[in-house]
Amino acid sequence: MRTDRKDKRRSEIESAALEVMRQRGYEGASMLNIAKAAKASNETLYRWYGDKQRLFLEIVKSNAAEAEAALDKALAAELPPEDILEHMCKQMLHLLLGERAVALNRAAASDASGQLGGAIAKGGRDRVFPKIVQLMGALREAGKINPPSDEQAAQWFLQLLIGDLQLRRIIGTLPQPTRTQIADHVDLTLTAFYRLCGPDQTGV
Amino acid sequence: MRTDRKDKRRSEIESAALEVMRQRGYEGASMLNIAKAAKASNETLYRWYGDKQRLFLEIVKSNAAEAEAALDKALAAELPPEDILEHMCKQMLHLLLGERAVALNRAAASDASGQLGGAIAKGGRDRVFPKIVQLMGALREAGKINPPSDEQAAQWFLQLLIGDLQLRRIIGTLPQPTRTQIADHVDLTLTAFYRLCGPDQTGV
DNA sequence: GTAAAGGCGTATAGATGTGTACGATTTTGA
DNA sequence: TCAAAATCGTACACATCTATACGCCTTTAC
Image (cartoon, rainbow over all chains, first blue to last red; front, side):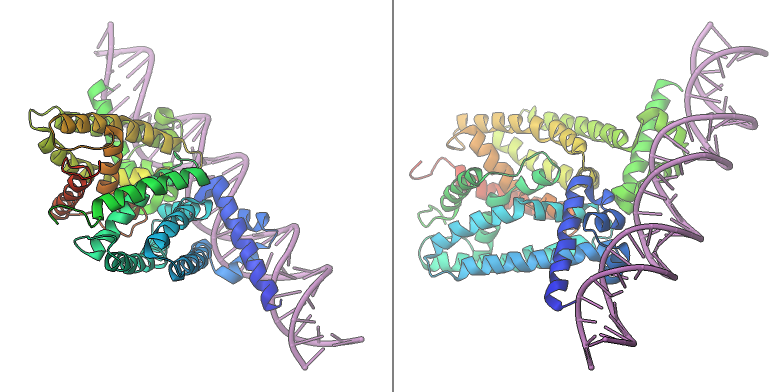
């Protein structure tokens, strides 16, 4: 199989895995079910991935790579930092509350070994947080915020942005938000964030 | 079996179920494994609960009842509302980041039907949120905060308090916090919260 | 063009889970 | 005390999953 065809096949299989997982949960996403859904042989799945855990590990990794690229693109834009922040808010909410991330987090919650969770953290929060700290530094230097520290600002920002939304998505009590809902939530978040970290704070 | 013995047995079985779930995940927590751990017969488990999902539904319900009672007790204390708030912070963090709640949320994340998640929300957030709104009202009347609305204050409060801590616990990348860590986080949360909603806000 | 490699579909052995059944033992209730 | 009910331990039929194997067919490499 040529490299590009093989890459395409891998991504098809991984999409199928996520789709089965979405419909039947991590438990129901057996290698057999995934193979059927992808019209692949389970022998191929075992040859390529070894076992179910490593299959999902691969998915986590490629998902993290995509997400990081999207964020980097937003961060590299030639815009004032407050516009970048707003843009990043929307992107992160779409990413974190979308079907893929939700499915992967569910898989991680189902995985008693903690390997999937570790991979998600390593490819996700651990990579993203420093970038947000940097962005906070840029905002501070632009006089937009005046937080106790950039790290503290980043932490508050993330808490206000995500809060328990992701968890509620994962346990299935919150539907995927529409673009409008995301925009509204971003407005609220930014209002609160600038109120909390704005430069016009008394007693800082 | 006398009622009190039966209640005790039920709670033993439910504890065993959570312990097996903690060690082997929702997938590994089969009725057989739970029965072995509880030294019960699987016939008894099926007679009492019907199936695995309903077993965990029962656990969710009894856990929610306990949690609500604890919160009510804190809320009913004869203290100024800001002391009640601080007390409630600690209690909620202990509750939400403790082994029981984490295990149940993992189970809900593994449950494709969404029933467990629904039960958790119904017994948890849906009940707790109005109480926090009420507490926010008391804080506002006491002149401690001046938020856009009590609901908004409650939402910001919850976001600042919990943020992504619960999710990180659930995917296994955050250990159970110590009492000291919880106290520190409560301090930070309250600082941020009063900064965000305090009465000395400009431009409210 | 042809041989090698690899995927597909199916088959398989072994392990495990679900839900039920049944005798032996214990507990309950009168 | 004694009969009824319930639990325990074990067994069972049935289904499913894991991981591997093999023949068939397509794709790749030379």
